[in-house]
Image: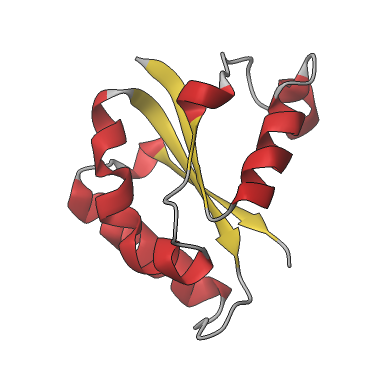
Amino acid sequence: MRDCIFYVADQNMAETFTGFLNRPHFHRSIGCGAFQFDPLLDIARAKGKTDGGLWRHAGSLCKGYLKTHHKLVVALDRDFGGSPGQTQIRKEIAQQLLSAGWQQSQIHRARHRS
């Protein structure tokens, strides 16, 4: 099993996470323990879906990673057309992921400011 999958809304986020997580000792910057990261295995995004698509379909998009990763980070902008706001986005994504089989302790929701 891999440590963590980062499911992101778009290519810009994928590149940002990849750049940051490939830095030496990146874990110190975010205050967590060291973990293995390979962008080919640990970054995912659904082509054709951006912030709104990830918000609406996070559970089904991330379900397959239950068998391959211990933890999950879902990252999307909080401000996009049709956004219900940060609080509602976080709540709905958490509900979807729990329904898909993820445990609360496995879910780490990240924010990307627009």
